[in-house]
Length: 488
Image (cartoon, rainbow, N blue to C red; front, side, top):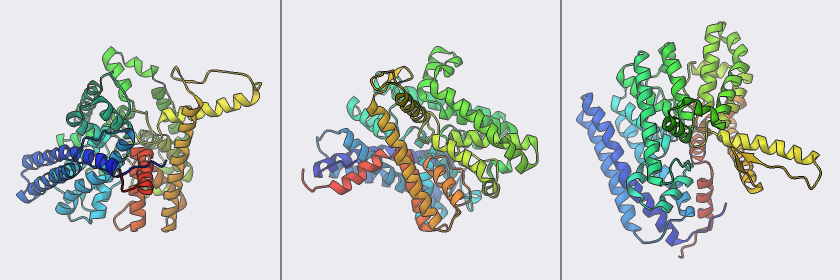
Protein backbone atom coordinates (compact mmCIF):
# COMPACT_ATOMS: atom_id res chain seq x y z
CA UNK A 1 0.00 0.00 0.00
CA UNK A 2 2.04 2.91 -1.30
CA UNK A 3 0.52 6.27 -0.38
CA UNK A 4 2.20 9.24 -2.00
CA UNK A 5 2.35 12.26 0.26
CA UNK A 6 4.11 15.58 0.14
CA UNK A 7 5.09 18.30 2.59
CA UNK A 8 1.56 19.69 2.87
CA UNK A 9 0.24 16.23 3.73
CA UNK A 10 2.85 15.84 6.47
CA UNK A 11 1.73 19.18 7.92
CA UNK A 12 -1.87 17.96 8.15
CA UNK A 13 -0.78 14.76 9.89
CA UNK A 14 1.50 16.44 12.42
CA UNK A 15 -1.06 19.14 13.18
CA UNK A 16 -3.63 16.46 14.05
CA UNK A 17 -1.06 14.60 16.16
CA UNK A 18 -0.33 17.83 18.04
CA UNK A 19 -4.01 18.53 18.72
CA UNK A 20 -4.65 15.06 20.09
CA UNK A 21 -1.48 15.15 22.22
CA UNK A 22 -2.68 18.40 23.84
CA UNK A 23 -5.85 16.73 25.06
CA UNK A 24 -4.04 13.50 25.92
CA UNK A 25 -2.05 15.45 28.53
CA UNK A 26 -5.19 15.39 30.68
CA UNK A 27 -4.72 11.66 31.27
CA UNK A 28 -1.84 12.39 33.67
CA UNK A 29 -4.29 13.99 36.13
CA UNK A 30 -5.72 10.58 37.09
CA UNK A 31 -2.53 9.09 38.63
CA UNK A 32 -2.00 12.36 40.54
CA UNK A 33 -5.43 11.89 42.14
CA UNK A 34 -4.59 8.28 43.05
CA UNK A 35 -1.23 9.42 44.45
CA UNK A 36 -2.97 11.98 46.66
CA UNK A 37 -5.45 9.37 47.91
CA UNK A 38 -2.60 7.07 48.95
CA UNK A 39 -0.39 9.91 50.29
CA UNK A 40 2.45 9.31 47.87
CA UNK A 41 5.53 11.54 47.80
CA UNK A 42 5.66 14.93 46.13
CA UNK A 43 8.41 13.54 43.91
CA UNK A 44 6.07 10.91 42.45
CA UNK A 45 3.22 13.39 42.02
CA UNK A 46 5.62 15.86 40.44
CA UNK A 47 6.66 13.29 37.84
CA UNK A 48 3.08 12.96 36.60
CA UNK A 49 2.64 16.73 36.59
CA UNK A 50 5.87 17.14 34.63
CA UNK A 51 4.83 14.45 32.11
CA UNK A 52 1.42 16.07 31.67
CA UNK A 53 2.87 19.52 31.09
CA UNK A 54 5.52 18.10 28.77
CA UNK A 55 2.88 16.25 26.72
CA UNK A 56 0.73 19.37 26.44
CA UNK A 57 3.66 21.58 25.41
CA UNK A 58 4.86 18.98 22.93
CA UNK A 59 1.40 18.83 21.38
CA UNK A 60 1.11 22.62 21.34
CA UNK A 61 4.51 23.00 19.71
CA UNK A 62 3.72 20.44 17.01
CA UNK A 63 0.29 21.95 16.31
CA UNK A 64 1.66 25.50 16.17
CA UNK A 65 4.55 24.53 13.91
CA UNK A 66 2.25 22.88 11.38
CA UNK A 67 -0.92 24.98 11.66
CA UNK A 68 -2.85 25.24 8.42
CA UNK A 69 -6.22 24.96 6.73
CA UNK A 70 -5.54 21.74 4.83
CA UNK A 71 -8.28 19.12 4.93
CA UNK A 72 -7.78 15.74 6.63
CA UNK A 73 -8.36 12.81 4.29
CA UNK A 74 -8.27 9.07 4.94
CA UNK A 75 -4.61 8.79 3.94
CA UNK A 76 -3.77 11.47 6.55
CA UNK A 77 -5.85 9.67 9.19
CA UNK A 78 -3.97 6.41 8.67
CA UNK A 79 -0.62 8.11 9.16
CA UNK A 80 -1.90 10.14 12.13
CA UNK A 81 -3.02 6.98 13.93
CA UNK A 82 0.31 5.22 13.36
CA UNK A 83 2.45 8.18 14.48
CA UNK A 84 0.22 9.11 17.42
CA UNK A 85 0.51 5.69 19.03
CA UNK A 86 4.30 5.85 18.88
CA UNK A 87 4.51 9.40 20.24
CA UNK A 88 1.96 8.93 23.01
CA UNK A 89 3.60 5.63 24.03
CA UNK A 90 6.83 7.58 24.35
CA UNK A 91 5.40 10.12 26.80
CA UNK A 92 3.29 7.49 28.58
CA UNK A 93 6.48 5.51 29.21
CA UNK A 94 8.18 8.36 31.08
CA UNK A 95 6.62 7.66 34.53
CA UNK A 96 7.91 4.08 34.46
CA UNK A 97 11.44 5.32 33.82
CA UNK A 98 11.41 8.37 36.08
CA UNK A 99 9.64 6.72 39.04
CA UNK A 100 10.73 3.08 38.83
CA UNK A 101 14.12 3.57 37.09
CA UNK A 102 13.21 1.14 34.32
CA UNK A 103 15.30 1.39 31.11
CA UNK A 104 13.39 3.50 28.60
CA UNK A 105 13.00 0.64 26.09
CA UNK A 106 11.42 -1.50 28.83
CA UNK A 107 9.18 1.42 29.79
CA UNK A 108 8.17 1.93 26.15
CA UNK A 109 7.41 -1.79 25.92
CA UNK A 110 5.21 -1.52 29.04
CA UNK A 111 3.34 1.51 27.70
CA UNK A 112 2.86 -0.07 24.28
CA UNK A 113 1.65 -3.30 25.86
CA UNK A 114 -0.87 -1.41 27.97
CA UNK A 115 -2.14 0.93 25.24
CA UNK A 116 -2.48 -1.90 22.73
CA UNK A 117 -4.33 -3.91 25.43
CA UNK A 118 -1.79 -6.72 25.10
CA UNK A 119 -0.75 -7.30 28.70
CA UNK A 120 2.82 -8.58 28.31
CA UNK A 121 4.88 -6.95 31.04
CA UNK A 122 8.43 -6.01 31.98
CA UNK A 123 7.40 -4.85 35.47
CA UNK A 124 7.16 -8.19 37.24
CA UNK A 125 10.51 -7.85 39.12
CA UNK A 126 9.60 -4.38 40.47
CA UNK A 127 5.82 -4.31 40.51
CA UNK A 128 5.43 -5.26 44.18
CA UNK A 129 7.41 -2.14 45.17
CA UNK A 130 5.85 0.26 42.67
CA UNK A 131 3.60 3.13 43.89
CA UNK A 132 -0.12 2.45 43.57
CA UNK A 133 -0.41 5.45 41.29
CA UNK A 134 1.96 3.82 38.79
CA UNK A 135 -0.01 0.57 38.89
CA UNK A 136 -3.16 2.58 38.25
CA UNK A 137 -1.44 4.51 35.45
CA UNK A 138 -0.69 1.26 33.66
CA UNK A 139 -4.30 0.09 34.11
CA UNK A 140 -5.58 3.45 32.89
CA UNK A 141 -3.45 3.19 29.74
CA UNK A 142 -4.95 -0.21 29.00
CA UNK A 143 -8.46 1.09 29.67
CA UNK A 144 -7.89 4.03 27.32
CA UNK A 145 -6.45 1.69 24.72
CA UNK A 146 -9.60 -0.41 24.88
CA UNK A 147 -11.61 2.13 22.90
CA UNK A 148 -8.70 3.99 21.38
CA UNK A 149 -6.74 7.09 22.26
CA UNK A 150 -7.98 8.74 19.06
CA UNK A 151 -11.62 8.29 20.08
CA UNK A 152 -10.84 9.62 23.56
CA UNK A 153 -9.32 12.83 22.22
CA UNK A 154 -11.83 13.14 19.41
CA UNK A 155 -14.79 13.71 21.73
CA UNK A 156 -13.63 17.27 22.41
CA UNK A 157 -11.35 18.01 19.48
CA UNK A 158 -12.52 16.71 16.14
CA UNK A 159 -15.81 18.37 15.44
CA UNK A 160 -16.43 17.59 11.77
CA UNK A 161 -18.11 14.33 10.86
CA UNK A 162 -15.82 13.46 7.97
CA UNK A 163 -12.56 14.14 9.76
CA UNK A 164 -13.52 12.27 12.90
CA UNK A 165 -14.97 9.29 11.09
CA UNK A 166 -11.81 8.87 9.05
CA UNK A 167 -9.72 8.77 12.21
CA UNK A 168 -12.03 6.14 13.68
CA UNK A 169 -11.74 3.98 10.56
CA UNK A 170 -7.96 4.40 10.49
CA UNK A 171 -7.71 3.15 14.04
CA UNK A 172 -9.89 0.12 13.41
CA UNK A 173 -12.90 1.46 15.32
CA UNK A 174 -15.52 1.88 12.57
CA UNK A 175 -18.41 0.42 14.57
CA UNK A 176 -21.32 2.84 14.17
CA UNK A 177 -24.06 2.76 16.83
CA UNK A 178 -25.92 5.93 15.88
CA UNK A 179 -26.13 7.89 12.61
CA UNK A 180 -24.56 10.87 14.37
CA UNK A 181 -20.86 10.35 15.12
CA UNK A 182 -20.82 12.26 18.41
CA UNK A 183 -23.78 10.25 19.66
CA UNK A 184 -21.98 7.07 18.66
CA UNK A 185 -18.92 8.06 20.69
CA UNK A 186 -21.11 9.01 23.66
CA UNK A 187 -22.91 5.66 23.58
CA UNK A 188 -19.61 3.78 23.29
CA UNK A 189 -18.23 5.54 26.36
CA UNK A 190 -21.47 5.07 28.32
CA UNK A 191 -21.43 1.34 27.58
CA UNK A 192 -17.71 1.07 28.34
CA UNK A 193 -17.93 2.92 31.64
CA UNK A 194 -21.06 0.99 32.64
CA UNK A 195 -19.39 -2.37 31.97
CA UNK A 196 -16.30 -1.24 33.86
CA UNK A 197 -18.37 -0.38 36.94
CA UNK A 198 -20.22 -3.68 36.65
CA UNK A 199 -16.84 -5.43 36.63
CA UNK A 200 -15.70 -3.49 39.70
CA UNK A 201 -18.83 -4.58 41.61
CA UNK A 202 -18.43 -8.24 40.58
CA UNK A 203 -14.77 -8.34 41.60
CA UNK A 204 -15.38 -6.50 44.87
CA UNK A 205 -18.15 -8.95 45.79
CA UNK A 206 -15.75 -11.76 44.86
CA UNK A 207 -13.34 -10.68 47.59
CA UNK A 208 -11.04 -8.10 46.03
CA UNK A 209 -10.23 -4.77 47.64
CA UNK A 210 -11.56 -1.64 45.93
CA UNK A 211 -8.14 -0.84 44.45
CA UNK A 212 -7.72 -4.39 43.13
CA UNK A 213 -11.25 -4.45 41.74
CA UNK A 214 -10.82 -1.14 39.91
CA UNK A 215 -7.53 -2.16 38.29
CA UNK A 216 -8.58 -5.69 37.36
CA UNK A 217 -11.93 -4.52 35.97
CA UNK A 218 -10.24 -1.87 33.80
CA UNK A 219 -7.76 -4.46 32.57
CA UNK A 220 -10.41 -7.14 31.95
CA UNK A 221 -13.00 -5.02 30.10
CA UNK A 222 -10.23 -3.66 27.86
CA UNK A 223 -9.09 -7.30 27.37
CA UNK A 224 -5.56 -6.45 28.50
CA UNK A 225 -4.90 -8.92 31.32
CA UNK A 226 -2.26 -7.12 33.39
CA UNK A 227 -1.79 -8.30 36.97
CA UNK A 228 -1.01 -5.79 39.71
CA UNK A 229 1.32 -8.04 41.72
CA UNK A 230 4.16 -10.37 40.77
CA UNK A 231 2.09 -13.45 41.70
CA UNK A 232 -1.13 -12.15 40.11
CA UNK A 233 -4.12 -14.46 39.91
CA UNK A 234 -1.89 -17.47 40.59
CA UNK A 235 -1.34 -16.16 44.13
CA UNK A 236 -5.02 -15.38 44.77
CA UNK A 237 -6.58 -18.84 44.34
CA UNK A 238 -10.05 -17.27 44.23
CA UNK A 239 -12.60 -19.17 42.12
CA UNK A 240 -15.18 -16.36 42.34
CA UNK A 241 -12.65 -13.86 40.97
CA UNK A 242 -11.81 -16.23 38.11
CA UNK A 243 -15.50 -16.55 37.14
CA UNK A 244 -15.99 -12.77 37.38
CA UNK A 245 -12.99 -12.15 35.10
CA UNK A 246 -14.33 -14.65 32.54
CA UNK A 247 -17.63 -12.73 32.44
CA UNK A 248 -15.90 -9.35 32.11
CA UNK A 249 -13.50 -10.56 29.40
CA UNK A 250 -16.44 -11.95 27.41
CA UNK A 251 -18.22 -8.60 27.74
CA UNK A 252 -15.08 -6.89 26.43
CA UNK A 253 -14.86 -9.22 23.43
CA UNK A 254 -18.47 -8.57 22.34
CA UNK A 255 -19.05 -5.69 19.92
CA UNK A 256 -20.33 -2.36 21.20
CA UNK A 257 -23.21 -2.57 18.73
CA UNK A 258 -24.40 -5.84 20.31
CA UNK A 259 -24.20 -4.28 23.78
CA UNK A 260 -26.08 -1.25 22.50
CA UNK A 261 -28.94 -3.31 21.08
CA UNK A 262 -29.25 -5.37 24.28
CA UNK A 263 -29.29 -2.26 26.46
CA UNK A 264 -31.67 -0.41 24.15
CA UNK A 265 -34.19 -3.28 23.95
CA UNK A 266 -33.46 -4.53 27.50
CA UNK A 267 -33.34 -8.09 26.20
CA UNK A 268 -30.15 -10.13 26.70
CA UNK A 269 -31.38 -12.70 24.16
CA UNK A 270 -30.47 -10.22 21.42
CA UNK A 271 -26.84 -11.29 21.94
CA UNK A 272 -27.88 -14.55 20.25
CA UNK A 273 -28.94 -12.64 17.14
CA UNK A 274 -25.34 -11.48 16.67
CA UNK A 275 -23.39 -13.91 14.45
CA UNK A 276 -20.05 -13.00 16.01
CA UNK A 277 -21.36 -13.62 19.54
CA UNK A 278 -22.65 -17.05 18.56
CA UNK A 279 -19.34 -18.03 16.98
CA UNK A 280 -17.45 -16.59 19.99
CA UNK A 281 -19.37 -18.85 22.37
CA UNK A 282 -19.06 -21.90 20.09
CA UNK A 283 -15.29 -21.40 19.76
CA UNK A 284 -14.93 -20.89 23.52
CA UNK A 285 -16.81 -24.08 24.35
CA UNK A 286 -15.31 -26.25 21.61
CA UNK A 287 -11.72 -25.15 22.22
CA UNK A 288 -12.07 -25.64 25.98
CA UNK A 289 -13.33 -29.18 25.50
CA UNK A 290 -10.56 -29.95 23.00
CA UNK A 291 -7.78 -29.13 25.47
CA UNK A 292 -9.62 -30.33 28.59
CA UNK A 293 -8.22 -33.91 28.61
CA UNK A 294 -4.65 -32.62 28.27
CA UNK A 295 -5.17 -30.10 31.08
CA UNK A 296 -6.60 -32.78 33.37
CA UNK A 297 -3.58 -35.00 32.70
CA UNK A 298 -1.13 -32.12 33.18
CA UNK A 299 -2.55 -31.03 36.53
CA UNK A 300 -3.66 -34.47 37.72
CA UNK A 301 -7.04 -33.12 38.84
CA UNK A 302 -10.43 -32.96 37.13
CA UNK A 303 -11.45 -29.75 38.92
CA UNK A 304 -8.19 -27.91 38.27
CA UNK A 305 -8.08 -29.21 34.69
CA UNK A 306 -11.58 -27.87 33.95
CA UNK A 307 -10.77 -24.51 35.52
CA UNK A 308 -7.49 -24.16 33.63
CA UNK A 309 -8.95 -25.29 30.29
CA UNK A 310 -11.98 -23.01 30.28
CA UNK A 311 -10.26 -19.97 31.82
CA UNK A 312 -7.26 -19.98 29.49
CA UNK A 313 -9.31 -20.72 26.38
CA UNK A 314 -11.59 -17.76 27.08
CA UNK A 315 -8.63 -15.60 28.08
CA UNK A 316 -6.92 -16.43 24.76
CA UNK A 317 -10.01 -16.12 22.55
CA UNK A 318 -11.12 -12.79 24.04
CA UNK A 319 -7.46 -11.69 24.09
CA UNK A 320 -8.05 -10.95 27.77
CA UNK A 321 -4.60 -12.26 28.59
CA UNK A 322 -5.04 -13.24 32.24
CA UNK A 323 -3.40 -16.47 33.37
CA UNK A 324 -4.14 -18.82 36.27
CA UNK A 325 -0.97 -20.80 35.57
CA UNK A 326 2.62 -19.80 36.19
CA UNK A 327 4.86 -19.01 33.23
CA UNK A 328 6.76 -22.22 34.00
CA UNK A 329 3.55 -24.25 33.64
CA UNK A 330 2.54 -22.48 30.42
CA UNK A 331 5.96 -23.13 28.88
CA UNK A 332 5.62 -26.81 29.85
CA UNK A 333 2.16 -27.31 28.35
CA UNK A 334 2.04 -29.73 25.44
CA UNK A 335 2.35 -28.21 21.98
CA UNK A 336 -1.17 -29.50 21.29
CA UNK A 337 -2.60 -27.16 23.97
CA UNK A 338 -0.48 -24.24 22.80
CA UNK A 339 -1.56 -24.79 19.19
CA UNK A 340 -5.24 -24.59 20.13
CA UNK A 341 -4.64 -21.40 22.13
CA UNK A 342 -2.58 -19.94 19.27
CA UNK A 343 -5.52 -20.57 16.92
CA UNK A 344 -8.10 -18.85 19.14
CA UNK A 345 -5.75 -15.94 19.89
CA UNK A 346 -5.25 -15.52 16.15
CA UNK A 347 -9.04 -15.33 15.63
CA UNK A 348 -9.74 -13.06 18.61
CA UNK A 349 -13.03 -11.39 19.53
CA UNK A 350 -15.78 -9.48 17.74
CA UNK A 351 -15.17 -6.54 15.42
CA UNK A 352 -16.00 -3.29 17.20
CA UNK A 353 -14.95 -4.72 20.59
CA UNK A 354 -11.86 -4.20 22.72
CA UNK A 355 -10.46 -7.61 21.73
CA UNK A 356 -7.60 -8.21 19.30
CA UNK A 357 -6.89 -10.89 16.70
CA UNK A 358 -8.09 -10.87 13.10
CA UNK A 359 -11.67 -10.61 14.50
CA UNK A 360 -14.44 -13.18 14.28
CA UNK A 361 -16.18 -11.38 11.40
CA UNK A 362 -13.12 -11.84 9.18
CA UNK A 363 -12.81 -15.46 10.31
CA UNK A 364 -16.44 -16.12 9.34
CA UNK A 365 -16.02 -14.45 5.95
CA UNK A 366 -12.81 -16.41 5.33
CA UNK A 367 -14.56 -19.71 6.11
CA UNK A 368 -17.50 -18.72 3.92
CA UNK A 369 -15.13 -17.76 1.08
CA UNK A 370 -13.59 -21.23 1.19
CA UNK A 371 -17.06 -22.79 1.04
CA UNK A 372 -18.09 -20.46 -1.79
CA UNK A 373 -14.94 -21.36 -3.74
CA UNK A 374 -15.65 -25.08 -3.36
CA UNK A 375 -19.28 -24.52 -4.35
CA UNK A 376 -18.23 -22.57 -7.46
CA UNK A 377 -15.89 -25.38 -8.50
CA UNK A 378 -18.68 -27.99 -8.57
CA UNK A 379 -21.47 -25.85 -10.05
CA UNK A 380 -21.84 -25.09 -13.78
CA UNK A 381 -19.70 -22.17 -15.00
CA UNK A 382 -22.59 -19.71 -15.36
CA UNK A 383 -24.23 -20.54 -12.03
CA UNK A 384 -24.94 -17.76 -9.56
CA UNK A 385 -25.62 -17.87 -5.83
CA UNK A 386 -25.84 -15.19 -3.16
CA UNK A 387 -22.78 -14.49 -0.98
CA UNK A 388 -23.89 -12.85 2.26
CA UNK A 389 -22.65 -12.11 5.74
CA UNK A 390 -25.23 -11.05 8.35
CA UNK A 391 -27.72 -10.27 5.60
CA UNK A 392 -25.31 -8.09 3.60
CA UNK A 393 -24.21 -9.03 0.10
CA UNK A 394 -20.43 -9.40 -0.19
CA UNK A 395 -18.73 -8.59 -3.45
CA UNK A 396 -15.48 -10.18 -4.66
CA UNK A 397 -13.49 -7.11 -3.58
CA UNK A 398 -14.71 -7.30 0.03
CA UNK A 399 -13.88 -11.00 0.26
CA UNK A 400 -10.49 -10.43 -1.34
CA UNK A 401 -9.65 -7.64 1.11
CA UNK A 402 -10.50 -9.84 4.09
CA UNK A 403 -8.34 -12.70 2.82
CA UNK A 404 -5.48 -10.32 1.99
CA UNK A 405 -5.64 -8.88 5.52
CA UNK A 406 -5.46 -12.36 7.06
CA UNK A 407 -2.49 -13.21 4.82
CA UNK A 408 -0.64 -10.01 5.80
CA UNK A 409 -1.44 -10.67 9.46
CA UNK A 410 0.10 -14.15 9.15
CA UNK A 411 3.18 -12.76 7.36
CA UNK A 412 3.98 -10.40 10.26
CA UNK A 413 3.54 -13.30 12.69
CA UNK A 414 5.99 -15.34 10.61
CA UNK A 415 8.52 -12.50 10.65
CA UNK A 416 8.21 -12.13 14.42
CA UNK A 417 8.58 -15.88 14.95
CA UNK A 418 11.73 -15.94 12.82
CA UNK A 419 13.25 -13.10 14.87
CA UNK A 420 12.48 -14.82 18.18
CA UNK A 421 13.81 -18.21 17.04
CA UNK A 422 16.93 -16.53 15.64
CA UNK A 423 17.54 -15.20 19.16
CA UNK A 424 17.64 -18.78 20.42
CA UNK A 425 14.07 -19.37 21.58
CA UNK A 426 12.11 -22.57 21.04
CA UNK A 427 9.98 -22.50 17.85
CA UNK A 428 6.72 -23.41 19.58
CA UNK A 429 7.12 -20.87 22.35
CA UNK A 430 8.28 -18.23 19.85
CA UNK A 431 5.15 -18.70 17.76
CA UNK A 432 2.98 -18.61 20.89
CA UNK A 433 4.61 -15.39 22.14
CA UNK A 434 4.39 -13.60 18.79
CA UNK A 435 0.75 -14.54 18.20
CA UNK A 436 -0.01 -13.47 21.77
CA UNK A 437 1.68 -10.10 21.16
CA UNK A 438 0.20 -9.39 17.74
CA UNK A 439 -3.29 -10.55 18.74
CA UNK A 440 -2.94 -8.28 21.79
CA UNK A 441 -3.67 -11.25 24.07
CA UNK A 442 -0.62 -11.11 26.36
CA UNK A 443 -0.39 -14.69 27.66
CA UNK A 444 3.34 -15.34 27.91
CA UNK A 445 5.28 -18.56 27.48
CA UNK A 446 8.23 -17.00 29.31
CA UNK A 447 10.06 -15.22 26.48
CA UNK A 448 8.96 -11.75 27.58
CA UNK A 449 11.20 -10.89 30.50
CA UNK A 450 13.66 -8.28 31.69
CA UNK A 451 16.97 -8.77 29.92
CA UNK A 452 15.63 -10.42 26.79
CA UNK A 453 17.57 -9.53 23.61
CA UNK A 454 16.85 -6.05 22.27
CA UNK A 455 15.91 -7.52 18.89
CA UNK A 456 13.21 -9.65 20.55
CA UNK A 457 11.90 -6.74 22.59
CA UNK A 458 11.68 -4.43 19.56
CA UNK A 459 10.04 -7.16 17.47
CA UNK A 460 7.37 -7.77 20.10
CA UNK A 461 6.74 -4.01 20.33
CA UNK A 462 6.23 -3.94 16.56
CA UNK A 463 3.92 -6.97 16.71
CA UNK A 464 1.78 -5.30 19.39
CA UNK A 465 1.65 -2.03 17.44
CA UNK A 466 0.83 -3.79 14.16
CA UNK A 467 -1.88 -5.88 15.79
CA UNK A 468 -3.58 -2.94 17.51
CA UNK A 469 -3.69 -0.73 14.42
CA UNK A 470 -4.59 -3.69 12.17
CA UNK A 471 -1.70 -3.35 9.71
CA UNK A 472 -3.07 -0.81 7.20
CA UNK A 473 -1.95 2.37 9.05
CA UNK A 474 1.49 0.79 9.42
CA UNK A 475 1.67 0.08 5.71
CA UNK A 476 0.49 3.63 5.05
CA UNK A 477 3.36 4.90 7.19
CA UNK A 478 5.84 2.75 5.27
CA UNK A 479 4.32 3.88 2.01
CA UNK A 480 4.69 7.50 3.07
CA UNK A 481 8.34 6.98 4.01
CA UNK A 482 9.07 5.39 0.63
CA UNK A 483 7.16 7.94 -1.44
CA UNK A 484 7.71 11.18 0.47
CA UNK A 485 8.57 14.19 -1.65
CA UNK A 486 9.50 17.51 -0.15
CA UNK A 487 6.94 19.29 -2.30
CA UNK A 488 3.29 20.12 -1.96
